[in-house]
Length: 464
Image (cartoon, rainbow, N blue to C red; front, side):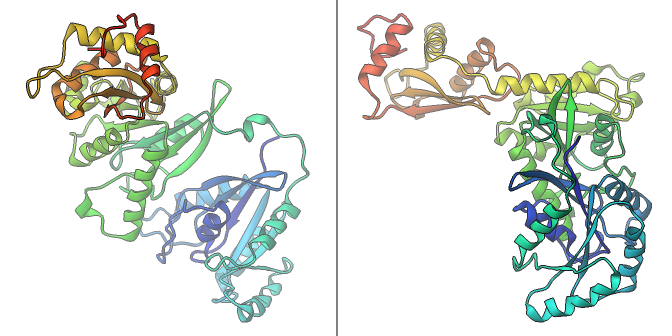
């Protein structure tokens, strides 16, 4: 039996996304005064007391979408309603009972599942009294809350718990933390949402030729070979000067945040389009956070008969030299061609990012690199590296203790980084290498032990 779902439903602009964020304890959904901001369903796993449940944010019922996506949004709302175990019907205490609220109530009344009423925007006692008019809906006493002012959150959570189905044994995989977070990024209309739908084998995301259909970063839990993962669809990004609304601004912010928090990035390209400035900025952002990345060339069915994969691969390498180590995948997201192979590769590079190297092995590698190609002389002396150690993962972070970090030119740092990549298990992921001046706090006896482990003479003063 899966985790129970609580779908938040109601007409536009009653504060459904605000309540979603409030319960989640973080800003996940975009909140804006413009009606119809939420299009796709957003989900978040919560634990309250000894119960797990998933809250689901849905679009506003009855919205007239500016991009004429009413039918697609309605489909997502209906999927949210049908998939829910409990429905949270949200109304606006300040606006009172409207004809559209009445229409929503009629839609929910005949469903064979629990529905409870929440009157949002009750920012004071007067508004709580005002909310009593919603008794006429016939769904019991409304829970009066204010997501904006943090009023009566405990009452809302208690009401959720009272309406949850019985606490049967749950599958462990439904509540465990996902093994990997996989983010799909790219500019507009490269096929991110289509790929999500293919992976989940469902209409999980709205897919439309309209640019900017996806407005928020949406987490989707998936299962691959018995393991739980989260795939994150992000809004397609535009050039900075083209971002004209708050919704677009926050969508871009969410996409950047997703990159920072994801374990592996799928940087997606449309094979029928040339690489753009947006692509370059995204890749630069990915590189700046040392994120494992797969360069994904999508819609390859359109190009397979006209171009060899090697040409597009060379095109990517020429434009993104700093990501030369990133693997390249050629897929057709619509029909799933090569998608499973790409996901398996994503798992592999994720495991690379978690690897650790023993200090003796690392020092032996650095010692050999220094002997093969000593650092160039700077200020009449050759700079020294005393020892190396790995201090972190995701990304693998290696510190080289030396006498003067500034004495090592960029070209030599690149050489050392290449040696580490070629000899360690980090062949396809970024490595953070830091040259750090040895301070008085570095223990001499620890240095001596490190030298003995790598087979140095006791008279040697450093690795170089």
